[in-house]
Image (cartoon, rainbow, N blue to C red; front, top):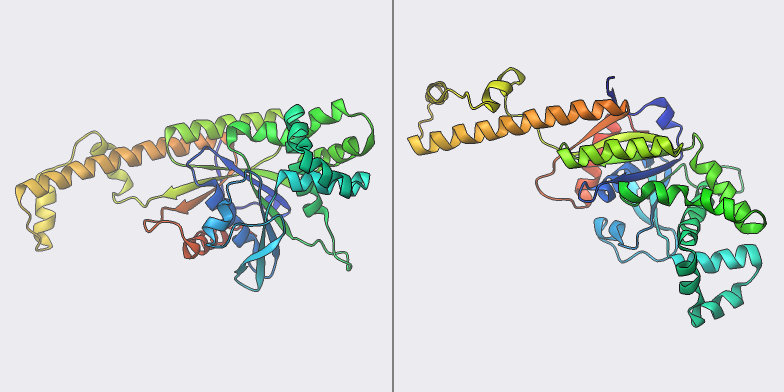
Length: 333
């Protein structure tokens, strides 16, 4: 099997994008960058956070997000990105008001601590509330019939928990056969298992993240959830020609040739510095060889693959736009 490069037409038709990944792979950064890329050209995109970490507020250097959709960034071409931090308690109160007309009673329940009790008693209820709110944002339309958002991007739980998070509504549907909870859960199940939804996996070219990515793809397939693209983060450019990597990784670096090459450029180094340079060359080649093996493993997923550059200066707002531009160049639309 071969890895597909770039964003596919099928992904271009997707409206709900979940971004998951092993902790430390930069999934929140990639979710924010994907939102900016999708908003390019005048589109409206909503970023949603469900884990309570206020990651988007930190990335965009804003105040902590309330339980309300607010503009967080502009995108090239007149696009707009909004963000929403879903608060479970607020979502449950909203749920009571929408389906049971219990707005006042819900506030009373909050004072009694009943909301915490309810979500503890039925842990799956928390994820149903979160995914239910996501579904409402995806399906919402304006008076002219146009969807409020052209795309919704969710910073999802890590790969180890994402299937449970997305599939909990199916379990709840089995428990609640009738009533608003069942209707809500069925609607969420239909959306999450439809062609409108894709789950993208953030990874690094390292053994553990790659293995967790492949395991995540298998779990998504097993749950009938659609994997989207593999987003390879922090890719560093090679400093050696491909033909030299294998020999250098085996330690076969000719110091005399290095010395001659430097001398031809009128660069003369002490012997100790030259030895250190050779050592760094070997280490770099070993890393390149390991990264190539990681790419070959990721090819087993048979998914579209996009690469994001390593940003040595860290991630700030400008870096998010740089990553978004890299995604657009690889076809994200």
